Length: 196
Image (spheres, rainbow, N blue to C red):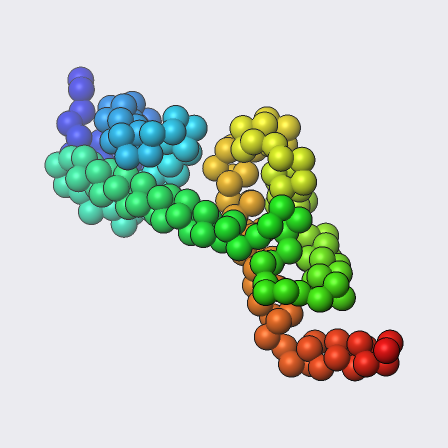
């Protein structure tokens, strides 16, 4: 006997994994197509699809869907796609702040500032979690593509993108603090004056 969507949704909400699997099999092609049309990247689409169905299972008690899951899944696909797109735009904007050596572009930095800033960034990179640090180094210092890094570290491409994005955010934040702290600037002036 084939169960209706309504029966499957009720069963899934009660923790029935078979009902969840049946809903997944029924809806994943439609959701995949919807995301792929917006993203145009197969790997990212798979990652987003996986996230949507993991959330569906994890938050099944809160899902408001009576006759069909289609409206909920459509909404989730749209939101996740927009979120991914925003992250991409944000990442590109952040990456534009950095030169190849990861030093923030500032107007006419002194040699000492550049050296101190590079040391600061090196220390910050060392503090990063291993996967983030490796993703960042392979991307920036070895110029490897996201796909190459994902293969080398056995991570999904989306995880690599997230790692690089978060690494850049940490460096940007640390660099901002470096230039905004008067103590750093005053300390550098004293150091410069005593060396003259």
